[in-house]
Image (cartoon, rainbow, N blue to C red):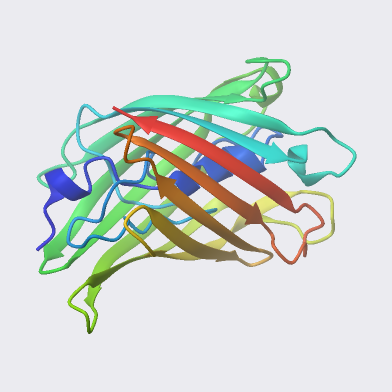
Length: 265
């Protein structure tokens, strides 16, 4: 049976760094849960199945604080631009099991110059059900709130997400943890004309624990496919790394490589 406090406590989704990292033109993290470090699966020895490149509704419990750094090449997916990164930090309040978890993050968009642009994002998450080796979460989130710099004129963005985590028994007695995340957002689809225009659309992602510390995932929007990996750092509690590629087929002519570092405490 899933033990929320031990398993989901710091487990949700390095991949959420991606919305800020990929859209450094003013878009912010709007994909659901905060970009927290990946921790061991609650029911098996394999890593928690984070999802890269799209949102997750899996929430952290009250009192969790986090900071995450993402670095992408090239900025906005334009080959003539330099590499750049984003920093997000925030906290979670409330219990998603018995009530609602509220998460707030401040997103600094761009490292050079540092903090010239940014915004605030917020989400509400709730566990809908849990039993046996599965749990289901739902979330609504809003981004581009209280923007400054280049993000000051951006319209708020909204995302609704449903995520299901399931552990499947294997022949050797181990359980394979997987996460399935579905959603729809106001700026989750990148245009395929090379202009980098964002619009509304649905997304889907699936993640899988591969080893005790490594998880892999693939995600889809109407115009792109993203693939990434997350790695927990056992020597540093609450720390995790991610590596991934947005738009692996370069269908939008905005392909990016992303490296992320997160810490939850």
